[in-house]
Length: 461
Image (tube, rainbow, N blue to C red):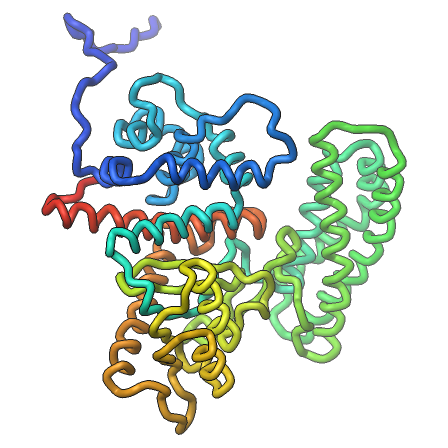
């Protein structure tokens, strides 16, 4: 039987042009931001950040204007770096934002990602401070009335339980050993039987462990199996340090194996402590791949514990936000962040706010006295128990109203538009960068809406 020829549509008599010539809407949010932004000042600040992090100034200078525009584009809406590249290549307002309307060149997604990695959380934080100071100059934000709060940034990890963490160790070690060189292929061959037993134990746990005694017994058996894997893995890592040079891909795999070995060495005693006492060990590891993550007890209905990082937020009157990532789980406790937020405000604006508000977690007589010593006239820390407010009733209502609105700002940053919550990041460093980008995008969108309102125009895009 003869094959039927595919029916293709009849081509048009005159082919359509692939170079459209439509004007860009002047009230598009990206166009408004581009027209209003002080690009020379922003480029100067970003170049200072970039030079402070480079080992050498050798090489061709970057297309800084395009890279900053791409970072702003990604901040204003959630997207991957590949999607950002595609938008910059084909979306006219995005090309206008990046200053590429007079050229056909487009930065690729690896260049954009590398630029974000170079800036890091602290670099994007400085860009966000630039945006907030811009809002203050435009009289859209008032730094004299400030409120603070802390929140959690959840990581994109599965719920951490002991058997799940140990199963992840087996899977990750097996995958990394295949590409780390001959030494680790030998280790994988020698440990094949132990790995098979471990995988069988994981399957049995998921299928048959229905009661706590059975679960505890199987977790203890799994722990003993992995302890037997740890010794040959340590020996393979030691031999690899003395061996010949290998490819960069193999070096990355070896670094991953060393990290997994160290994480399991910390996890095993914690698992044994939990089996022995029924209590979670201090500084419990919740992810082998990102061991810096920690659990945050929030006491919320339906979600008592969140797993990720702690952030401190400061809101200026007008709705603009500043964010600070905690260096560890104890740095931004409520009682400490009430003071830290004012210190950061003084460092940024040169003077303390006239009024500062915080919830009852930050209240203490010492904190009230410290804030007054820093220059805060109206200290609006919500009192605990029967303590009285440190301000009069009218000021209390004003600060309480401002304090309530920070929850809405944090909720907006955590929405699906900005990628703050459970970001696509595989390290604490990139989680911090994603968090600051989300706050930057929130502030820039707020600026765009304000500029449109001034012009009495309808914002599009």
